[in-house]
Length: 378
Ligand SMILES: Cc1ncc(COP(=O)(O)O)c(C=O)c1O
Image 1: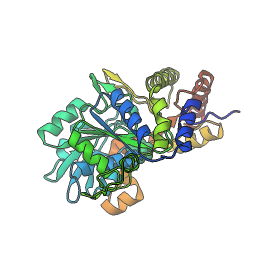
Image 2: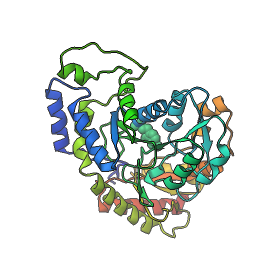
Image 3: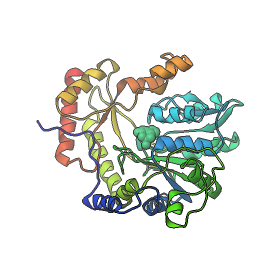
Image 4: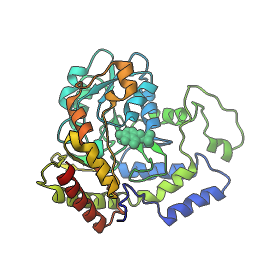
């Protein structure tokens, strides 16, 4: 039986030619290609500024730094996410304060946040899990009322909308990933969007050690001494990554439509099947559909995962909750039971293949195989 890959990227021959053009040129690092990618992402999102970086983790870290969040501060964030989200909070020197998930979407439960706010809380860092936008209107109201910074982890959600709001619009900043399995990818890559020009300038400095002239300035203009007014990091996107991404921007909406159509097929195929539960989409939401997950009985999940792989279906688990990873247990003393909804999702969830190149016949194979395997082993 042929394998249904968990993910295949959408990089075209034209994207490869554009990257090859950069490789044949003199200038490989942050320059004109990065500027064009930033501009096309900025226009797509309808935001004021975009800064190209090497990862979403870098974007989250710099976003927190750009708002001065660090030592002694607390940042509220979901337990149900990839560890990059809370690791970035630790990298900034602050403490992640976890909140449980809503059952229907897996997103941070906005109703539980207020109780977790203390004098030390400086920011809320929600994650648009699987591409489903959080309730950004509620989070914005709460952040304003409690004078907190709101930074969106949009690693899953370039395309999401909810209640007329797009990703990046209500957050003070939004952080994006172009990691290998994301809807547009350069293997590794990331970006941050912000509304405030001064913060955008600061982020441009912070992404390159904190020095006040980028490599392109030093290359295109005559040599001038540079200074380092702040301490930054080495997080600048390069022209090779940007060249791969620029062309993919044109296909973002078509890719999301195809993924939505596949998700509908999955929803129809699994509706009412005993032993399979699915997430629900909130009203007035256009789901970004980065990942499609099902939930099966916790005690059988790993068996189902194994058999699906033996049957040639690429699967993943997004995610086992962060607070139960060894480092977090040891450092903060977390125990099972702390965030019951996130833990249930983590124990029951399975991600299925979802990408524009997935063929209708493969979607059919996934549905039939999953139904059969869950019937037998679930
Ligand atoms: C929710 C979430 N946040 C952050 C990240 C980190 O992204 P990157 O790999 O670009 O640093 C990921 C990566 O997959 C993610 O899934």
